[in-house]
Length: 121
Length: 347
Image (cartoon, rainbow over all chains, first blue to last red; front, side):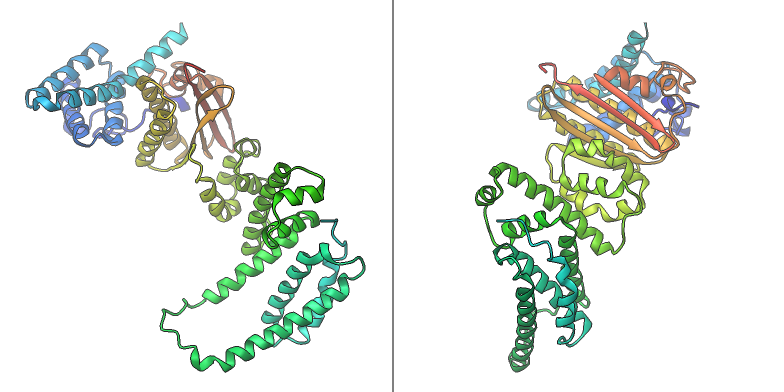
């Protein structure tokens, strides 16, 4: 095994990056939506790096499991819409900013994979 | 100031004899010898040639007499010495004496001229401008010399406290580079790798590292757990944010940090990362990640997309190379060092 193949551990998932046993019974997309909702709701109140790291790990796991960037975008917007429905009007800009920050982290692994692909051409 | 009398250190045996014959015990004698030598060194540039030995003899006797007077005064004043404050911790006095001894030993390790300049500045209070006039130099040059002398003094002090010589020829230059706080010298001396390999330097260097940590354009994080990865991501984002980089670049930097520290934990078990702002001809953020793991057998292959990859997507090192502007990977039996830089778009 070479050194470049090591995904970081994914919070809430097994060491090999695959969903943990509780998530194993769910299809990858549904497991991602559940984990995404939990991580995003954890990020909203305090904006901590731990939650951003979880977002990155979820995005990386999605890449290795073959989920597309379109599916990631769909999950993000579904969860974001749920949050917006319960959000006071004066908090909307702040929540939207937080959603943008979190989504960037989720897309980061896809971005990296795309750069590698383009570099390799 | 003129060049020191070359016989200062040769006076030591004589001073030891004089003091030893008068002091109450060997520990007191050792302290008084050091006190004498410090005074002689401090005054050496004011003594006429050939008069240093008589001066040392007189100083040694005076130091002993002063000690006797102090002891006598303490005895007489003992009844008044009731101190309601909290007494010193047991051993505190011993520690204090050890520290004094270490300072004296460290001073003796410096070259004569450096001793003289340091003492003139720190003990006699002579400013750098007048020192520069005496040395035929500039105040800035003298300040630079003093800074280097202090850096060396810190190292010799720690070694004297440790009571042992460093185990390798590399230790002293590494500790000096660490003490001086110069990033380029640290890199040239390969300080971080040596600290991972050398138990002696790892043990004695924390005070020097804490001092270096006071820099506000550099962050160092020991990576042993997933929490350290998160701390490293956060530190990278915070430091790089000062350069006004776009948020997408901050995410890119955090991604590269996550990948490099993830590899570190997975393949070496632990390591260290340093994040620093580069402010030279170009501005940017540099990350240096080092571990003492088994190394990468074929670096070029490891940097190649999709080779033997468990996730078959070429993340990890190829990903880091695609994210950052400059990436170098050095690997061998002693471990792996990844150095990567992201430059500001405006240079």
